[in-house]
Length: 320
Ligand SMILES: [Zn+2]
Ligand SMILES: [Zn+2]
Image (cartoon, rainbow, N blue to C red; front, top):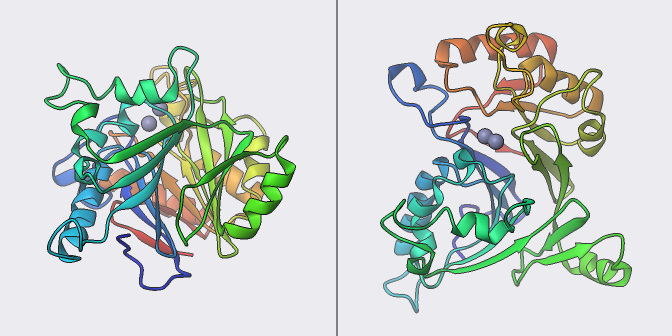
């Protein structure tokens, strides 16, 4: 399987898309980038992708070039395999998928997980967004093996860097299977449902590998006294990526009208990071109105409140 990591115990995340709502471009958005939500995580040689916003397009190009270099034909090339997690199916988290080249390769494999909605099962929500007349191609043109499964916060995905199909286990029911799987899996992915995003919330993911952990809490709004469930879920993690889409003044302004939109301010993210005692905080899901100048300001302000914090930017590599 194609790997960006020679070190089999390396755990790293590459920020592929950190913009919320819609992609932006132009001279004011060069430093932090304009692609929508996508995170590339390497646990040893295994690839986990969170969200398929437009940031996944460049990830696809890099995977394709490594794939082509790996051999001269299908038989000799190293195939692409990944776990693909969706926080939710809002368009800024799915719109890159039909332009993610590896999805068309017949020898690629994707284990795709995300939440069901009350109106649509997860798989249908994704595949119905991949239909003509909205696109020139449809799901059936995507020849990779796409194995869909909806997950909820009571289930945990276990995967092994030695490969094979990931195991999804209900930790409240399947005690024996859980015990056995934990012995053979070195990657653990758990989730927490955040209700602080309209209309049906999002899944916040925690990925654990080699004694380190990352929590990705995109598209979530803070609560008075902090989001106590999220604080508990993120306790002591090495890296928390937290939504910080809005400026405090905009959020509070009667004209701005941002309360209840399901996104946080930098101050809300810092409150969670401090209470959870996380080692590093990355601010993500930047509002499309926040240009480089504004994000520089958010970055400086957040460092004053929590020194180990930063406004995340596209292309950023964080090793854990
Ligand atoms: Zn979003
Ligand atoms: Zn959303």
